[in-house]
Length: 171
Image 1 (cartoon, one colour):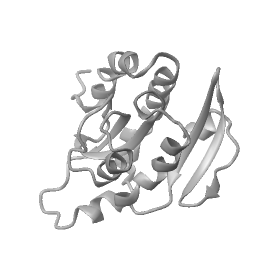
Image 2 (cartoon, helix red, strand yellow):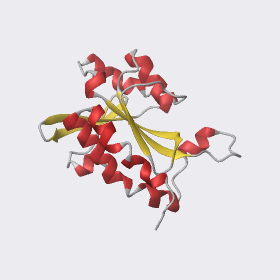
Image 3 (tube, one colour):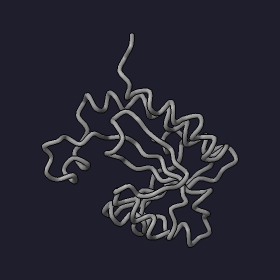
């Protein structure tokens, strides 16, 4: 989504990640997709931190989140992994909880589910995609706001907007 919006070149494999690089306005941006299991996502950011990326200002991790309703998203500047194995791995690699994250709601988990992995890895149903697709531009706007103005401004502008779709329609 972001690579297409910004007309970045195709992702290329580099060790345990796929990367695409380019510029967004005056900002050099590197998009990184882990090519590992979720609970090893920290390996994707470890090399960035070793190369001098400041996690508290220059890193935004996008993750799916079962604790947030489908069709909502939340930006955070720091915090706990909240049971998310990917974020737990990122925290362990960075040795810090101070990095931005954009949590994209895919919940709630069905009550009869026995294995969370089955839910998280399952493809979205058509109705779920219809709720998510209108949010892609808004989430991309939130990422661009983070780039230009920082996480606090992005949180102020977009966390309220990111929750609108989980409210019942009143029309």
